[in-house]
Amino acid sequence: MTEKEAIKRIKTFGLYHAIGDLPNSALTVEAFNMAISALEKQIPKKPFYEGDGYADGKIVYDTWICPCCDTRYEVDYDEYDYCPECGQGIDWSDI
Image (cartoon, rainbow, N blue to C red; front, side):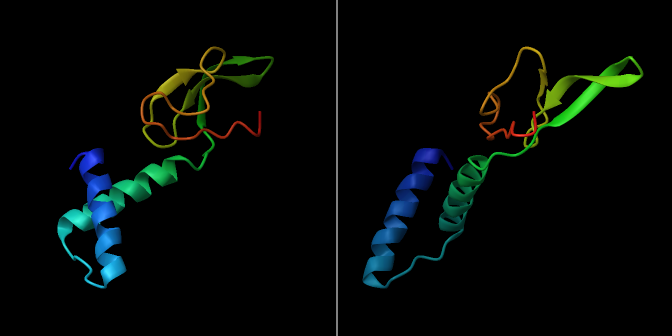
């Protein structure tokens, strides 16, 4: 199912709901799951960090990892509000 198909199905569900005749199909469930997934990605999550070296006896974190899709980015160069790969919101509040 595509995003457009999910939107159409959710809108149709709203019409059926208004008249009291709710559809109960696997496609409707899939459309709602897609909508929930998209909304959950808007809630920022803290990235994971990975380091491969030490400086002054402390680990140097040079990579941050998206908490949703595990895509890796450079700490010094790639600071996005949303992961470019999957769209997950990133919470930078601890930095």
